[in-house]
Amino acid sequence: MLRTFHSDLSDWTSKYVSWLGRVAVLKMNLLPRLLYLFHTLPIAIPSSFFLMLRKEFLSFVWPKGRPRVGMAVLCRPKTRGGLALPDMKQYYTACHLLRIIDWSASNSDKRWLDLERTLSAYPLWAVPWFPPVAPQGAPSDPNPVAVTLRLWHKCKSTHGLSTALSPLLPLCHNPKLQAGVLPSLCIRLARSRRLRALDFAPDDDVGNPLCFREGDPPSPLERFNYLQIRTYLRDLNRSYSLHRPLTPFERLCHLGLALNHGVSTLYGLLQASDTTDPSFTSRWETDLGVAITEAQWKMTFTLAHKGFCATRSQETSYKILTFWYRTPSLLHHIYPDASPTCWRCDSAVGTHLHIWWSCPHIRGFWKLIHSAILQVTDMDLPFTPGCFLLLQIPLPIGTLKRSVLLLMLLAARALIPVHWRSPEVPSLRTWISRVEAFHSVDLLEAAAWDIETNMGLKWFHWDSYATLGET
Ligand SMILES: [Zn+2]
Image (cartoon, rainbow, N blue to C red; front, side):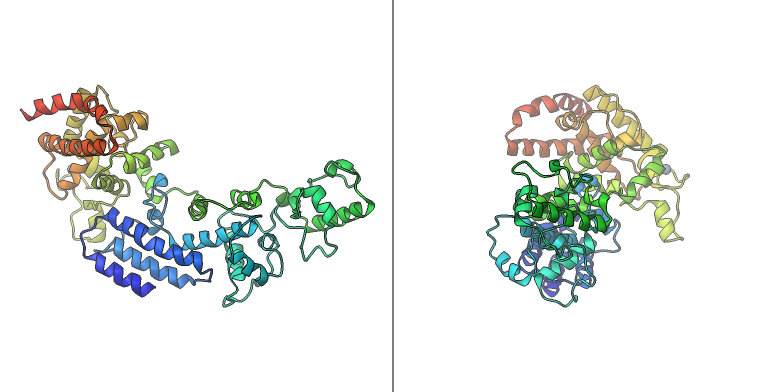
């Protein structure tokens, strides 16, 4: 499999595919091929396989040198500062987690479940929730149930899916509860044959009949069995974890239903367990000397990917965001012989913020854009790098997407890399032509979505401005 992927990716590497296009190739071509196998073959896959795969992915996404953005950042969802590059190991984990949800479904018609039921000593719905017994089978054990359980116990705490002992701890079929559970007690307490720890109230009184559900009063035998179960739970000494609210994954299992779009849902759940921010966010905050709120970052990420349909514009937005462009100070850091001073003013250190914003030469260009935006849209934007570079604009995203303002800003930002490593500053005329190019793409997109009627209003003031500017 790796050989096939290596050969396919080597063939495509030389083709002219953009950076975002390469990520899309991995997502649309390689991911489905792997997912099919992950679904159909519930086997243990060693970490070395994923390491090799990651190496292949990295050399395809970065064919000409070292990665400029970390794999962990690229794999994050787009709404949280990534490019949604598939993390194959997490997809593999999600496929195994989906099997646990299928095991929990009460009326599943999946044929493979019959086979696995015969491989397991206990009902499949119960086995993931028994306290783990070390060791969880030999790593070479081909039994698919053992493979899924091994992975489950390994990842459940690290991804916040569950705890060592869960409220879903089964009492029926529990090998540690030697007295067993009377079927009639199961029905009384859980209304099903799946009695779990959560069906017991935390501090109810054994003698209090309210702790039993409505119906006939419990028989002495049922009361005795109830006491046995209480004692077993008390001996576990985990009263807190057994009565905590269920985690999202536990809720999915407890519902006992098959899950639609299961792998994507579980992959999202695994990704959500990483609550850290991408590394570039703190660098921006240090550079700008301001604290940027979560809502502002959300706006930046949304506009970077959905502000404009052109892939090239999205690519530039993401590259600015992740410090992709190599500035003189960075080049000097890598190659000490290279000069760290700005190639435009030749007086200050060419840091990222200087090149993009504070260099006196480029500041003039931004001032022109600021006044043009004021002229066309009547919007006096805050003259800050947060607004012009990170698109943290004090307007709702919906309004921005309907306005020409966003495309005017995107066009201005796209021109700076065009004059990279050159003392030249983009001219107003070049900017107008770039906005006009965006205008054509915008019209094409509107035609594709059949919303051309709104276009006249959106571009009306720009058209008057551009006509004046051209003359
Ligand atoms: Zn400068």
